[in-house]
Length: 64
Image: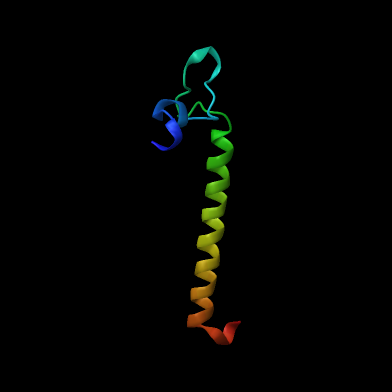
C-alpha cells in the first residue's frame, strides 16, 4: 500500500453514514422513486413513438 495508507482508512473516504449509524436500504420506499419511474416510462413511450415514426417514414416516404 502506497505511503502507509491502511486499506480501511482509504476505502470509503468521503462516504458518510446515514442517520442513526445504519445504511439505508434501496427499494420502493426510497426518496423520489416514483418520479424516476414515471420519467423513464415517458421517455420510453416517446422513444418508441419516434422509432415507429421513422420506420413508417422509411417504408412510405411519399406520405411525408
